[in-house]
Image (tube, rainbow, N blue to C red; front, side, top):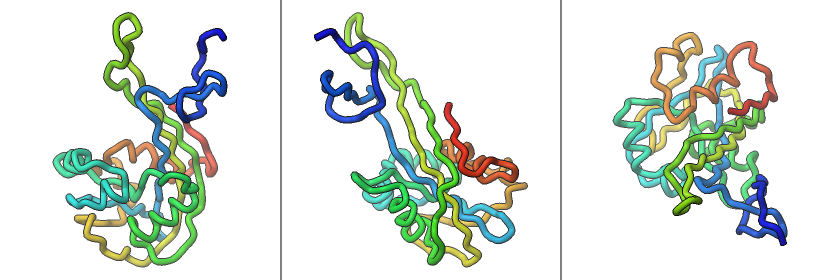
Length: 192
């Protein structure tokens, strides 16, 4: 059998027969929830140190500390759980992370971003830098009620779109917010 020279976006244990590979710096599947009130303001939160970020949101403690130290705000979001559908993840985020009591999240975009490069992998002549691939399902929901407070947020606040540029939005979430901007194509797909 000839060696595989292409790497296909089909994930699992490396298996040349089935063309399955795992990217060196990994892949993450995430769901983002853009919560808007009737004025079009977007819900952002400032996290506080809490075990729930790692246990239920797949955001390690060191990343939470970075966000806090840099005084950044983020969208309610989470990686998908194993075998969880993007829609179930959006519903989980709505209830748990955003604290929104009613409404049905609606898929508005699919975001595919290559991040990195991460540190070198391999050894000798095969040593190279690799990228991380992030795939995000972007959902939107309308809620005029204030969110239910949760112990992992220091603060949750609706921010007017006109003031969004002045806010420090972290973890590439500002890129995700672009899908909610006036004039953005609903159901759009962006890749970088």
